[in-house]
Length: 294
Length: 294
Image 1 (cartoon, chains in turn green, brown):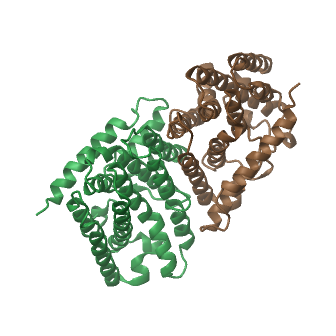
Image 2 (image 1 turned 135 degrees about the horizontal axis):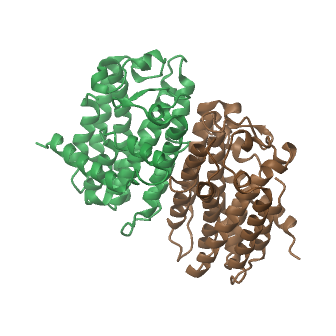
Image 3 (image 1 turned 90 degrees about the horizontal axis):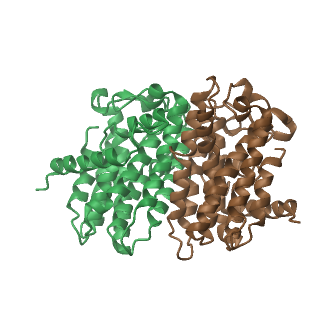
């Protein structure tokens, strides 16, 4: 029986140590900027994206350490999206992971710029990776930029904002989920596969896995927003409803959401079950995305 | 006698055409986001950074076309900095190049996200360049990320905001100018050199040129803010003084600012005069940075 708890603990420790080492020191000028960057990056969290990146590398027969820096780049890019999402002109959130958000701590301008700097730093890290052949060094940047850009995460974010207060719309919801959340999770596993020198077929399997697990993850998020407690989530619950956010639960109801998430996880697992490395962690992680409580 | 006017016209046309072709269409979903991205990118301007990038490539003996995409990436990254600088939580400007700023046209959230998307797109373009050996494909991303990040442009921006209203401080002013403006201009010429397969010595010469011309450019900006008309600049003049911005003119006075800019240009020209390609455009561009009226 695969020990997911122990696996997550050890991988999370590697991610924390890696971030601690790679992030510019707080004493670097300008101090307030580097403090703000570290404040959000070192705030904990599940570290799901870098862990998925390493697990995908293992699944295709690579060493997880080969995918660590790529995973860290995805993680700080994810952190930038959270900082900007929390800004007053966006979701205007004052609490994130049980702590004041960046603009509450450092002011709006510094939060904006800390987000910009993390996005930029993600590409600096990727450009600095010297991967073994046949990995093209700029393939990783290309994956991340496409997933994070106007036709990926940011595109989903814009549609999400536009959708607030509008009538439930299954097609629009699907667009938002695929772009806002699934794109970056798919990129995480694809980048892990690339770091493990995956064959084109293996990369296709990882893509399918990432797409399904990413959608399931977002549906689970929508479910948690109505079923969880503020203590478990580290942020207010039920606010999706207040903001009239377009969520899977709002469009399809709670039970259909749970069924859909389960079906997606089965599809994700089926896609990668026969990869030539060790797919066990990826399988367990897929199940974790929908069984987690925060 | 080198025809700078004709040179600028023809290079600017190449930049406009390149941007028009490379930018995602306005019809791409989400439409409002891609409209906002194009609105700011296609707003004209001097296009100094991509022109410098191509001129640097020529100066080391390369074809200017080899450096076009790298130059366009710098230009859209520059555009993102302008959009974010104009936001209410930053300089809160309503006018840029004679037109309403992005957040006035599209709302604050869309302006923020259009800026994020342009920053990301710059790295997507760089990752997609297939340069000839011996150019390492990720060297361009590394240059741009370092120049634009927390120890470059963004660092200068943070110190600039912190400096508002403080007593004149020559050391701080120097830090701000070197980071906020010179870093990206230096990166433009270095990236052009890299695209032209510059030798390490030639790259050093371009670096010195970029540093000096970049500082001169910012000093000229400070001078124009007090000596120009709103019609010439396409934005209000004298607002540096109102905002108690730390400028070269405020610290050193108008005449010393002019002398300093001239000295920097002489130093920039001396650094690249003997490059093995055609340094004539770079020489003329250095002089242009301080003689321009907008």
